[in-house]
Figure 1 (cartoon, protein in one colour):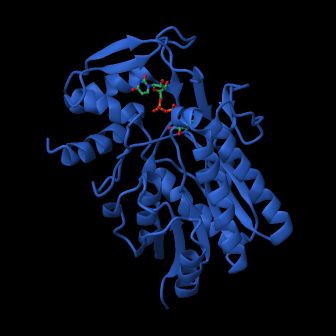
Figure 2 (figure 1 turned 180 degrees about the horizontal axis):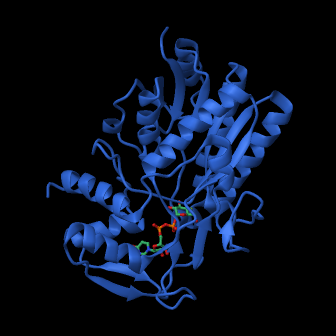
Length: 328
Ligand code: UFG
C-alpha cells in the first residue's frame, strides 16, 4: 500500500519543512504546497513540491485529486509581529483570507482533518505564570489576532461541516534538524537564537538585547524555547490523533521551562566556545516579560514529549546548521 499523503501547506518554511521530514519518517507522504514567497525550495526533500499559494483553488484541488490526502497541515502565514503592525492588511489577506480559501477547497474536496499552526501570541498579556489552553485569548497585535481568527473559523467549520482541527499553539520554536538537513532561515531574521549565533559568528556587529529592566530574575525577558523537531513530532502525533479519533483538539506546545535572553546568550557562548558581543537596547514594543506554557494537555492527549528542548541541544543543533549555512 502506498504511504498516506498529507498536504503540508507552507512546507518549505521553517516548522513546515521539519514537519514534512517527521511525516516522512513516520511513513506518510508529505505533499508540500508552497508559493516559495518566504520558504525555500531547497527545504522540500521528503516528497513532491507543488508551487502554489494556498488560495489557488485549481492547484489545491488537483493535488487533492492526485494524492488523496487524509489531512492538511497548515503552516503558511506572515509571521513577523512588527511587520503585522505596519502592514495589517497583508496579514489579514495572507493569514485569514487565504486560510478561508484553503479551507473552502479542502471542504469541497472532502478533506476534513486540519492541523493548524497557531501561536502563544493569541493569548496576549499573560494572566498567570504558566499558560494553559484555558487562558483567555486577547491578542495584543495583528499577528496574534489573525491566528485567533483562524482558530475561531476552524471551530465553526467543525460545527457546520465536520472539520476536525488540531490547533497547535507554539511558544518559541527554535533549533534545527539534528541531522543538519534543515534549519531556520528567515529573511529578515528577528528571532533571538539565530541573532545570537550571527553575532557570535561575526555576521552582525552586536546582539541587541531588548531591555534588561523587566521584573524577571536577571531583568531580561523569559521565553519557553521548544526544539523545532519536537514541534514537528507533535504535528505528526496531532495528525494521527485526528485521523484516528475524528475529533478536534487545541494544544499549547512548550516545556514549562523559561530561559531569559541572557541565559540563551550565555548558553550559546558555552556551546560555541565563542564570545557574543552585545549591547543593551530599549525594550521592544509588545514583549511580555515572561511567557511559558503549561503543556500538560499535549502530553496527556498526543504524548507530546519535547526530548530535544533542553537549551544546550537546541543551541548545538542550531549552531551546526548555521555553521554549514554560513561556511564556518
Ligand atoms: N530578543 C532580543 N534580541 C533580538 C531578538 C530577540 O533581545 O535580537 C528578545 C526579545 O525581545 C524577546 C526574546 O528575545 O524577549 C525572544 O524574542 P523572539 O523574537 O525570538 O521571539 P518572540 O518571543 O518575540 O516571538 C515568538 C515567535 C512569534 C510569536 C511569539 C508569541 O517567534 O512568532 O513568540 O508570543 F508571535
